[in-house]
Length: 262
Image (cartoon, rainbow, N blue to C red; front, side):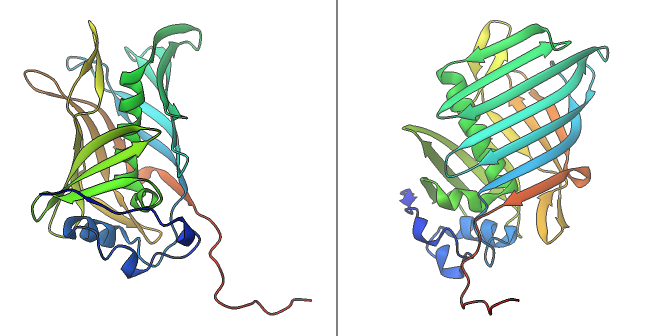
């Protein structure tokens, strides 16, 4: 199916999103945005998340609790994700994923002093942008309406999506349930850190249920999975039911002048 491109309309960034703003999108995309409740709200320009979850570094390692802070913003695409966990349930580890001005970086330290990894380069640039795309689709899909995004249907319950930032394009596939709720996002534009270096690897974020909290839907639990040769490797899980999500958007333009005060 031919991909359809819908240009950004910055003139309406301060208005609530009307039904006609998404009317020409492919049907699966429109059903997803309707399920997410974007109609009747202004565009999200950023979100912050305080997350709790679990993390492990290899398929044969035990899970360790982690606490994370995340902030994503648009239309200047940025992402900061900081995590605190332990290695072997003993060594304190801090990790940070960032994407800003078209550049990605992954850095982790032990005891806040010793560098465990520090990865930069085109693989991280693409990988962090693909992760931004996944975050937006699952947590704040209206952010994508202010960005150069292409959408195309992939059957009744799935669609393909492509995001371009500063000349770099990443792609993914979203599968939906009958309500229009995402079940899983998958991309081929991430690189796993393996013993021999960075390896391009299929990556997915299956979602285990959805909740309605403070008038917004959010995943109940999300998992990050590398599809390594042999079997998938789930390395991170986040419990959104016990996490804090905060959203920001421009002031909504008033339809009429406010009466004077005083």
